[in-house]
Image (cartoon, rainbow, N blue to C red; front, top):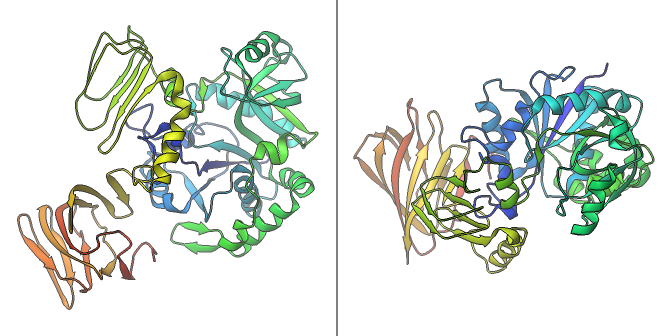
Length: 477
């Protein structure tokens, strides 16, 4: 049997889970269900024990997420061998799957491609694995297999798949797809559930990579040509495969559903019930998490009194809630969301407005992750900014300079190796140094524990784009 090549799609921004999910730190990189495992890690972990899986996992992600993706894969107990493809621009799932299929065929011309979004919850991995195995023969026979979720209720937030066979006749086998249907209204969704031959569209797929490309050549030949050119022109960058920007940008933005699955005559659906959710909103996350006796899901330092059926999450400080019903309250260091639980699909509207106003909150948290560690803004005002910087053991910042700001560093924990102009020296706890405007400098942690320091910036402009890099261990420009 051909080997299964997992293709993990990790390119989304998860705006409906704002303020926890941000464009530069999206939901797939967050521990949403358990405190010790991100959604990306859970996605890769559910492959463990699945027969016929190849040695390499292919992950395709946004270029700006690359170091977080690589680090989270390395942190896993059974760290997989991974090829990380970088999308220079977002073009939805069809170009991502196309590029993944072309890459997979360079490793194995007979590869079966198992497409998995990185931000889905599956509570029963064994049921998921049984469904994958059940779909393998149809995929080997040249069909494009999708996985339908047996609907537990009349959901209006999902698209549906109608099978030719009723689910009572399907058991765990595959059925030809009769049609894909868009998100229904409440009455129509109720009819679908009662009919017995409709399934939620999970966005999970299994097909031979070569067979997918045949269908894409029929329906979207320009997309295939652009993806082939993007891979032909790709460059190796540390652990990453950087798709050529101009070629990939020529792809039309489209989903794999619209580009192929709704147009092919060879779509098959395998039903499953693995406790699936796409975690597409705060209400979906609440439904996927165990509630208390009052129907509340509580996370963090929360005091809730006379609250019912609410999701309340505190990330940094005490949140006190009184008399709330069907509410969502999410606190982060720099933003708080308070919403009616039945309106959480509209959170994207808030994010769009913030982005239009040029606000930072849709993009980043106050704590910003970098390949060398992280920094967090503590205070800011006219002509000054204070940050807490944490440098991981063995890591270093780039050799750089600034045109518009000077910096003062005070070491709080660990030992810093400082390059300042022509001088190199060590600073230990409670020691400090000054980096004048225009002077080349570098900060390194050669120790075994994280290096923590306070940085005070002063100058006429304090933006992150005032960095001129001369050398960088992570290939950043």
